[in-house]
Image 1: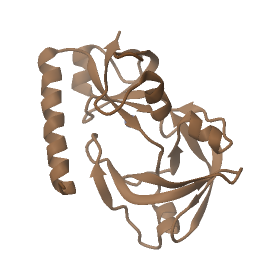
Image 2: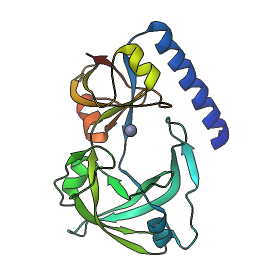
Image 3: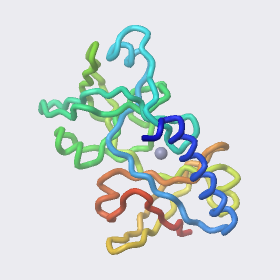
Length: 216
Ligand SMILES: [Zn+2]
């Protein structure tokens, strides 16, 4: 059993080695990570759910620097009273609470989910969140995250893409697909990584270690 700290170090080393390979080849391949249902939380909601003064505690680091899966989970309840009992919170805390589900998850909870860029939650479905210490009735904030690629500014300019651009990404394998309308989200410190949800991954037969090629 590796400690979480050690696992974090190993993951970072592997990631940097992969990044180095990508750079040396100058190609447009992109690792694909699959986002299971999860949520982001703002501080006051966190304290309603987990008690006054609550903070998120780290389960493991995610690929993007500073982002992590928290130990804390919340029950997400639809108006049809169906429940996902343990939806993991991803940290750090944000300005707005947001639940990210696959389209199939949304159907289960009786919601026709819009595909939105993270953070754009205006007019989206309400939902009830239940933590060990309290309940939050979220007026809006459930989305299906628009598939996207995180990439550093330098990396983006080197391979000829820019923030906000839509690209296509081709995957290999017996169920290979080409994803169109993949949003480029470039920022100074981001590492090259594509995020899709479990519906998209299952449709394309993708699992751990998946990768694709950016088509321009
Ligand atoms: Zn992402």
